[in-house]
Image (cartoon, rainbow, N blue to C red; front, side, top):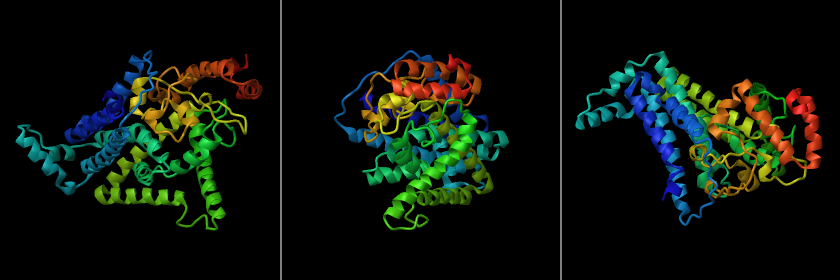
Length: 391
């Protein structure tokens, strides 16, 4: 049973800790952030040399589906509790319900008093804790579900899960653009050229992702004889979903609720793009060549993969994007020195990023690049201005 539950238990525990922290109030609102750093980053570092190279068989895939559905439900519930914690009223009587339960089991804690006592630091903690959950757990579940293009319910659920953090472009550009153009520098905005820094990628790359997403829909709709700015545009659908979430957030908790939600959306995006940045950094593919597991950096750290629904087996995912997360196979692939959560954190810190990334790139050049690729990469190395790559 463990081979199924390993993709669910961390998310359930994290969501439970976060909700408990929101109910406790005060400094406990930072519980969601603390959980990510202690059990996510800390867990990956402690298990740095652990490797999950297993490829289990699953007789009951429905269990995996129910687990990921439950995780999405956790995201919606945590958002509700976060909005309750900053609302001027007791939303849906939730605080009164919790107080009656706590009284029944003999605990003397008034959650309504605790929430009213939250100061600015506590409110920021709510936003960042929520963003951490949506950025890691949410990215993992949304990524998985939005790839299930042949399952309307899963696709619908994944897109609404992304709407919680205003992820309005990923399900189009990532699925139909990035997975087609991986490694084609200049065509895939999520395949940064060597020498590009994270904060350039975070800004210029975002604009390019948006252009690509709208371009994909424009091509699709014009081929069908429809207006690209019509209601048939899936990117516009995503904006409308995000707009509805923002409207509900504002109705529930006013400007304070919008503020903590906005913080959470920024944190979530920051995490997602850090992951995108390092996992595809500096790798190329020749136009017309098939995508293989060597065209991205992967990780077989078990902790990180449990947090992200096996996203660390990224090379296999790109090689067979139609497969669900539990069927991502382990095989020899280019790997990062830490798990995906830690590498995402490292991506934000330039000096640390270059310390880890330069050896990764040199290893790829020596062990994974074809001769034709190496000729192009050698030119990229010279253009990067990074001395360690030019020797």
